[in-house]
Image 1 (cartoon, rainbow, N blue to C red):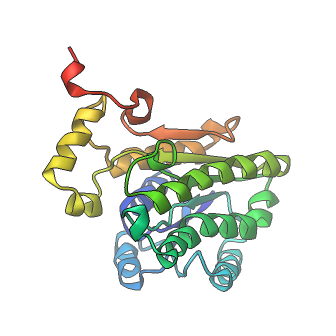
Image 2 (cartoon, helix red, strand yellow; image 1 turned 90 degrees about the vertical axis):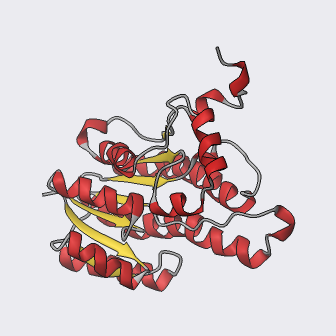
Length: 249
């Protein structure tokens, strides 16, 4: 039975991915620093191993390796999904806010992948999927820290793929576009929702389950010759660039 560790797994895309993997027969570890949300996730996936940890803290990462090693003795898949969103003008983004985003969105995937490399390589090579964002592929206002962290994570994905491939470890990334998570729907105004619908060729937000399906594919043996790729699961948002709805026919 294959085993996977999903970070930021207590809700949203992380939890949807864990559920998808569970349906495919994977043995799971769910990691999150939100203790209460992790307890709720345990109700949905009672057979999964729950790890209360922060991916930005090296001591927590080391403890997670010990827990997974003792429980599973192997690791076939790692999903670096844990992330922090902080939106605001450049002039209002303090260094503390900048670092808070970077330490989770960029330091976390670096620390986790590095720490779990031996386990991932032990059985002929596993797979890593980093969760970037469409904001790492195209710039927009109010995302100086978030967008930069995700662009850097996309490059980290390539670096990891180039080096860890020698160990049989595949590393790819999924870059979600607008997704109808509870958090997004709580903060997006109707004007924002309408604007996204106009900008997306598919004219709708994505679903958590659709992003989870892309992640699950990249972890699976069906993607055995795919590494170093950034898959934009975004309804065509990145492909179209900036377009004016009034010019559509």
